[in-house]
Amino acid sequence: MPLSRRLTAALLATVIGGLATACGESKVSQCNKLSAVVNKVAKEAQALSKANKPDDQFAQLSKAADSLDGYAAELQQVQLKDETLKGYQTRFVAIYTDTSKASRSLVDAFKKRDQKAGNAALNSLQEVASREDPLLKEVNTYCGAK
Image (cartoon, rainbow, N blue to C red; front, top):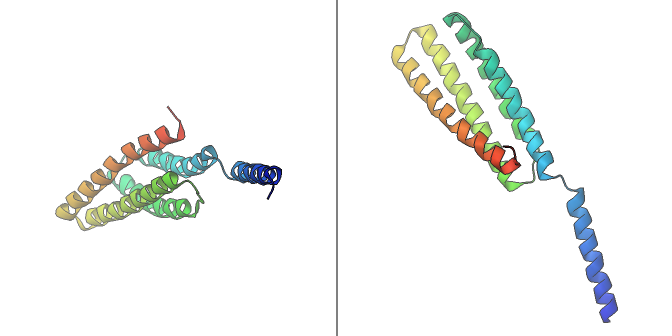
């Protein structure tokens, strides 16, 4: 193959590769997809914190558990190509699922007046909550938020 043909082929391959990359979804776009669901969860948590009476709190907690299951499913459906973001996605899904389970356990313990189960559920909720802030910071750092 003559040199000019090889250069043309190499240039064409470079241009096609560049176009394929340009047509792919950007990191920012993928970050926004992930953030859209995470922000819904944050709004739900704020609404939960407004419940005043213990009975209201447990009714809200039960409702939040259902919502978290839905958000976990919604987040699993988000299509991401970035491997780091996929890892964050998996971790958020685990947090939402674990929070939902612990919330249901807490509500059940409250209804049964089972203090030991209630304490275990609270400990579980605290452990799960401790995983969320560091993950949010990692995502914000990776996605370029301050």
